[in-house]
Image (cartoon, rainbow, N blue to C red; front, top):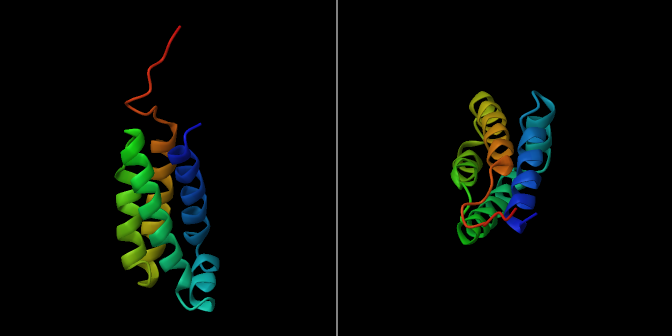
Length: 102
């Protein structure tokens, strides 16, 4: 499994946690919105790794946007959930530069 796929699973799991109603928001607020900054950095790293591997980068781009608007209560929760779903689906897709042999 490529490093970009591992990062998609990790960031997708973290986004799913942050999207849990009440608990995700409580975690973000109790930590002084630092989790949003950490997720922004992780999504940028994932985007760079995905670009290098030739994989789908929509989830990482959506994650960057989510990290920027995640402080808005209801919008943030919805964006975290959508981002987690997109990241999980893009992690399942094969990278475009991987050659399969039979």
